[in-house]
Image (cartoon, rainbow, N blue to C red; front, side, top):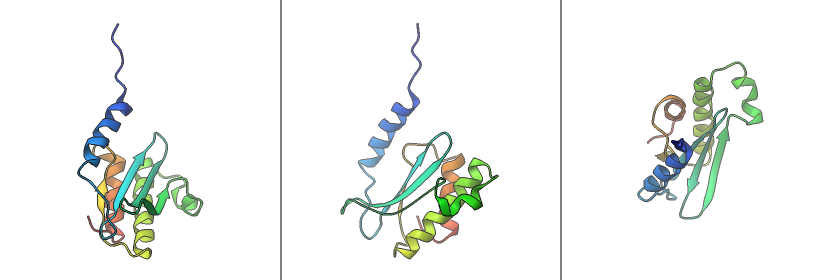
Length: 122
């Protein structure tokens, strides 16, 4: 019998390898992405202080009206715009993009495009 490989376990290992070189500082925090099967989450994190500066997700109440009836990729774009506006309000302009071990296509790419369009640079 062949065992089915655990794709999330492989993703976590890839993310751990990436995180050895990717560090968010106060000047340039880390924009972290987590993608579940139904939702997408983004956080801007200062790793030196160990603090989350701002966060946005497809579950936010203030985004619910914008997200209703949209596809997952369209929702990811809107969440990207939301995290960027929150980050700019918090005084963050430049970030390091942490794709969380996911391939840079689909929802992860749309979130990044939305964040760039709303003013974040990475």
